[in-house]
Image 1: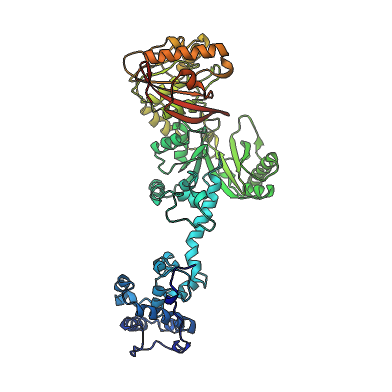
Image 2: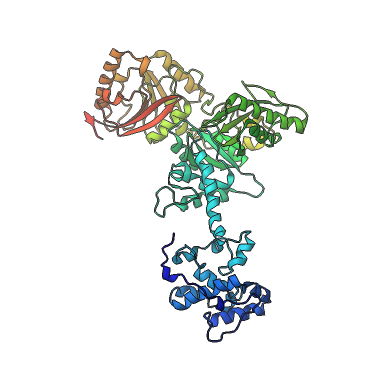
Length: 609
């Protein structure tokens, strides 16, 4: 539907049409093209383009050209800037005389508003503004509208793929051709406001602006090196830590990182894959995408796995494990899908190397993850092996342990500064305090553990050794402030001290003491942070629960004025029991347990919101 007034639609007189074999006529006083047409014709003839001019003079083209010229003649000041731009005979010589009116005035009977002519598809596709139908022929379509829709259709295809990736959990970055659009979809902004065909209202808030996308593309290009392969990578993490994981990845140099569901996406070469395994405190695994495609049946998954060049990374001499997960997949049996993916991998290696790899579900040399969505499958190569929260120093876990990457996430979400005191009055096996000390000392979390990429083909041991040596060179000699943990359980404190010793920390860095949380106090006059995972649920009976929180709240108000406190719990009524109002509530998951990270600002004798 058009907003063009009916009076602007010009019906052409058949008598004015140029014959099919007519050559361009000179200006006889009746021509509506003016002296510019003469210059165009003369330049075209001089450049040997008379044949194009004869084709351009076909009846339908003559109708289109003269009608447009008539409209321009009736409105000499319609687009003065365009006339000025086209006054150069040298540039005009590259266009046919009938092309200019078609580009300037649009198609007869078109429902496109005349004010939108500057956005015609021939300009968007890089063709000359005035080539009209011949440009359409070169693009493979006789309909000029096809040129307008084509860029939008590409964008819509990418968005449809990304809208799946936005709900995938451990899903990959998808097709590498759509990396620049990813942040739009995952933030929940793309699909709701995008209608079928790619239409979006001009002022719709459902998209991020183009500037961040451009910044991501520039970041990828800046890291690209000749002959170095770049991989799409997905780093899963506990739900609720996606934002701080993106901040961590950007701090490590991955400027194109963006948050997904339960993880973050970015791109990296193989050396960077090793480095992020070594340095990331928040990721659970580092998964490199090796293939992606549309699947509708289990046999499609078999063919996708068979088409993947697994021999690049492992062979029949190594053991294999395959894991499959799905979100809204129509497949009836994940176990059968897992079997078909495994068969595809083994068939590929048997065809290439004459033997199938053995299966090891406990300590495999190579681990493959398959993720299924409604219509797609993504194949990942696990470069981490055991989960990255297994740092190698915690053997004594204690009761209700907190995973190391979640503990590091609490530190990041709380805003704790490494030069400030930190106390955990319910420290258990000391996970939060030890993670804080290792972060403050700049100790890489993976410095003392093995990784799956070390057992893959083509592993460059010398490069891996250089990465570790460089990381060790940046470890600080001592902490600016002692960190402390307390627990009423003597066995928990013994486990915390053993864990700290295995992590290479001395008592000058971390201090653990058997103490009741209601009797704790700051180590010095400097204000700091309380970050803790207090007991809740079955770990406390009702009477102890009520008395503990009331008395501990009194201690907080008396001893810790000016401190910040952040505690993770699945007891949503705990702030009421403490008679404190949280300033922040951050949803988190401790394993499968839904929790909240409550933040408080403590003042002596009360609370300030």
